[in-house]
Image 1 (cartoon, rainbow, N blue to C red):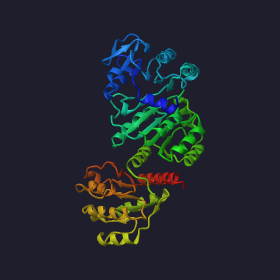
Image 2 (spheres, helix red, strand yellow):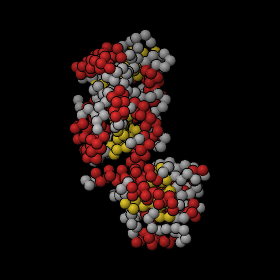
Image 3 (cartoon, one colour):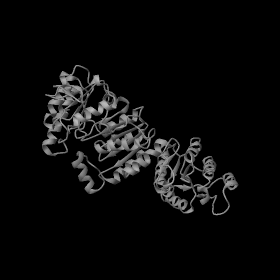
Image 4 (spheres, rainbow, N blue to C red):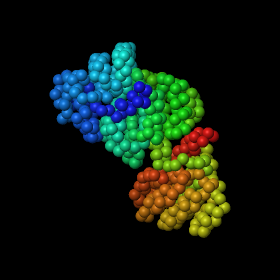
Length: 457
């Protein structure tokens, strides 16, 4: 069985066992078991494994994995590390093909931990059992009600797949993104990668029909050549957005103690990203900024940008940021100029790019709507950034009516002053929302670079 088929069984298991779940307050296994119940996993195919508990979180508990009377494809292990070899042996005998070892104290924790980790790898390898972790927070797949954090993870399934060398980030990003209307297909906490690793997860997401966008937080890679070759191929079909941690000397040492990862040189990673079409980000904020654009917007055909603003200074500042990030300020077509001249006021405005609609546009939101319609249909414009513009009712809905008819990305900047008076818009199909024009310009430049890669440029 290849790794894609193996992971598919893990993400869509017939049954789940949580080893080490108990009723003791603060027990992580019991906490996770409750999370599966909340997510809606079939209670008849879910159980705890504990030597003395008879019932955990209202579900039947069994002394060992071998005592479970139904088929189990996925086991999550929260028992002490010393019990690891015995637990993996029991899982192998049961025929469980996927074990997520959430317990810590293995390869990231000195020579003794390294030896113990190798022991569980050897046991699993003899039976064909695949391991995720150890030292991780688990996996998440809302379409099959598999969860990694009780009571927090969203139930809606989407099209974003994530693998992460940080367990907390594999929880944080799906939760934060869901508040923006962005939903995940799956998320994986890689842990120490004693068996299955980030490259395996990349290969899986590349073939997973549920996943259209791949994001990752990485501190290193174990098979650089395979990673590069997979990424170079997958990027032609799906965007891959990666936040690379452990780039500084201090970061590299932290990565080694965190998951035992080999971080590598920043220059090498930069070259790999460029040659493989990977979208690189440097922070959680940049990750979410890029994610909402790739999730809600079409890719631009080129790098020519138009800016629409009711405040001249803001329009100029956004234009400066666009130029800094390698975007070209679009030269509007003659017909666009003529149409703009028909309705833009003559005083205190500009119909050149950036288009300045003047302060009166705050009270006349139709100026923004009409300008967006003109620039959205100008073949010389590949992308648009516009400021919020107005606090009048239905303004954002009217903007969305236009953007949904366009085949180019549109970004809206919420101005600090108008935030006091208007309901804050949320990103949706056809528009992305940012607090700052510089952030929007950076994301558009990343989208344009990615599109050039896909088109062979």
